[in-house]
Length: 304
Length: 273
Ligand SMILES: Nc1ncnc2c1ncn2[C@@H]1O[C@H](COP(=O)(O)OP(=O)(O)OP(=O)(O)O)[C@@H](O)[C@H]1O
Ligand SMILES: [Mg+2]
Image 1 (cartoon, each protein chain N blue to C red):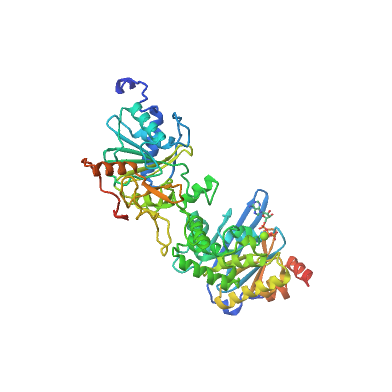
Image 2: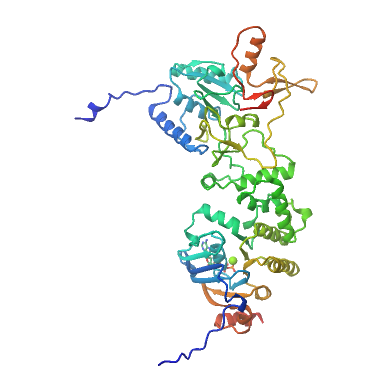
């Protein structure tokens, strides 16, 4: 008996753009990342036809997950129609045969830059966040190998100290996006530059989240039903952006995260950042039957 | 029949400590850095509530010994035990990094000669104290503030400047911040490595006064390293004399100063007088 009689004839495969060995490495690292929630896993970031820093980390994870039955949604700051989002989405569907969608409810994989959609994600959905800087300790420890040691020892005193210092100097915590959060009571992660508004959506979520940085060559994950706790002092509660009262000037909906549009007269008007939610609200107002899912925030209040 | 003709050795302890169990015991500590034998078979015992002075010339291994006590380094050989409530007795050098950090955060405070080693110069003074509390798990901002304030106050640091950066403070004030950080959690053991060296004489006296008062009011056990015999004399109950990494003499401070046994100690004491 020879080895060849036990195995299938070998043929080079490159489904989904990445070669098989690249995907095998990514799969292993993604499984490890799920096994140790919030812990950063180094991987050999491959070349993809896009500049590093434009979501290559997220793209590599998506390409590893995708199959012809997948439905892919790609957003940039909440919008499906940005140039970058549109070209990433088209690229993924072209190399994989997966379908494209703008609708959060219909997507099986959602790749996103800087936002988590407003409609509550389900167990059968995977969120892939593009991360520019995955290291929450970068500000307190520029040396990466020492930072890794600090994670291993759960040595987060200095990180807490930066929050203390902000309260002392500014009276409030200035950290806006990428708010450092403790995952599963063990590793502190930076949840990519999603706004504070979106961080509670990752806590005990039904869906799986991958966070991947192509330039920094590291990825981490938040598995379903995993605790994600923003680092806050017990007597200084976590606060999301004050968007509860803002109304979208186009769709008229309120109680969601908004983009601020400065006006010539110095005032601002607002548009809902999750653009597909706004579009669906407009179409429903025009009389179409549109499925709008349950949202994480209801009446501006988080309720999951 | 043989009669023991040897003279009984002079008592090593003040009478009130004779019955007490040691807080710190180090046995057979040796450490080499390349060809330099920084510590050679050092034995140290420190009793609760006392001030143990460590003297010796430059390079004799005083700072190395203190770093060992603070678990910053591991010797080539040796055993280190601390008697702490709710802790099993074990050789502390067997502990991993995480356990060492937790033990030090809760039970050991240290003041370095060089404030840059002990302080984050660009954070606030109160933050430097708070960091210690944060490592120990305190998560209330108000409690952090008030405990940091109390510790700075006990170190006689001017509270109006509690949020100033150490980089903006004088050397004496920086030492007080280090001291506040060291005592913030009421440590079982306070290690002081030349805490007043580099300060001018009047500031030095003030810092020593603070240390004395802390010792009197809180009965903190201290190990005080200094090459200044005057400082040791005013502070220490017992003295350990080091030379070339070895302990050459150990005894009650008065005894060592009045009747030094080892030729090196004699030389040291007489040079000073
Ligand atoms: N990390 C190290 N690497 C190499 N050599 C070291 C190290 N630490 C200490 N030594 C050496 O060990 C010896 C003892 O140093 P140590 O700093 O303990 O002396 P000291 O008694 O504190 O001196 P001083 O009074 O000058 O502070 C010195 O010869 C020093 O060069
Ligand atoms: Mg020294």
